[in-house]
Length: 245
Image (cartoon, rainbow, N blue to C red; front, side):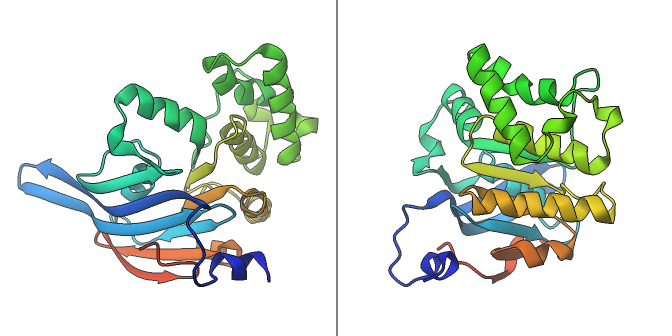
């Protein structure tokens, strides 16, 4: 049985679920009344799974990703990360869970210009007070995972767009999170860099991470296990994987 078959085998338990939305929705107040950015949504994201979240601008993609990343609270329903109902956590506990379990990769890389690649990757470990020798080991490991050890002393301006994005991926990985969330990670890349970064994201999933990617680029479909389509804040289509209900 292949890993994909095992993931979808009837009766499979939920032990491999990293993130789950249970009827999670998000409303914002505005002068004209409440705006429902995301309607009640059920979704499960599993270890070794690469999920694409697609849809037009304003469809709720970033809201959904932000709920998965625990940077927004749902208006209704709940978000569970590795079996923990985040409604049971205070702000400090939620921040600790984000640092421990979730890595973020952004469209514009968000690298710190005066720092080298390895210094950028080291930054979250410094903030989390990881011991220096352990931090060095993790940085080297993260650079190796994205095949950039030879560029470790380069500044962001000396790196191509694809290399900068791979540094950003390494920075997201260095803390050992279970869940990697990517917001349009290929939008600023040329075609050659795009292919490299897509393979890196697929490799992350194959290593056991749960990876969710918001994108307009449907070329990513070839690398995904599951694709959900959003329209006006509602999941209108889901292909691959389990239904998350």
